[in-house]
Structures are given as structure tokens and as C-alpha cells.
Image 1 (cartoon, rainbow, N blue to C red):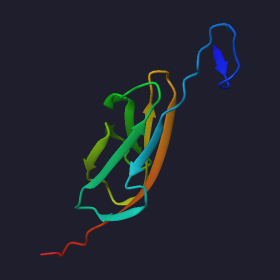
Image 2: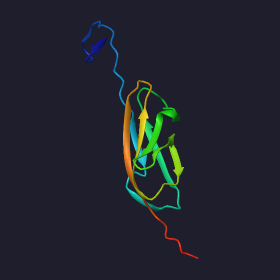
Image 3: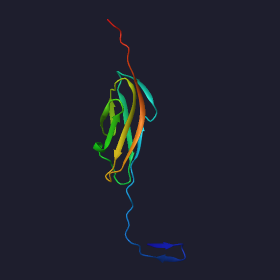
Length: 116
């Protein structure tokens, strides 16, 4: 390594070192809580930034609901959920095995149907 202030310079050798893996940064869109009728699809998208991996594979982006369980994998989901207030979590895991999770609350309201 060499350091210089423009006038003086010095150099030194250091032993080899590694920068430790860092977990990915995860953000869900829409991030704010929302309410949708049960007959409409819920659209969820995750943006992931990771220093180690240019792109985290879809299989390592896992979506779950505290009511419905595992919802799927990938950076985008479009699905129908059962009525209730869901805490939806996406977990991104990089090649170093480090994970980050983000949650959003989605309330699915039942649709009232008329009896014949």
C-alpha cells in the first residue's frame, strides 16, 4: 500500500486480508400497509442490493405470510390472499449465506356477496 499527500509518500506491506460478507439490502414495494378486497390480486415487488452478488437468484428471495405460510419465490409476486391482516415477509439470502428480511402489512377484506 502506498499513501501520499502530494509531497511526501510512504509505502508499507500488509498481510493479506478479506473484507467480510455483508447482508443484502431489501426493500418491498409497496412498503406502506394496504387494504385490498379478497377478489383482487396483491402485487408485491422486492428490490435487493447486495455487495457480493450482482443478482440474487429468485430461489433465494422467499416470500411468506403469517396467515398463509410460504407464498413463493422471486422478486415479484401477484397473488390472491385469504381475508385477514397478513404480515408479509420477504427474505433475501446472498451467496455468503447472510440474510435480510423486510415486512409489509396487507389487510385483505372479505367481499360481501348477495344471496340469490
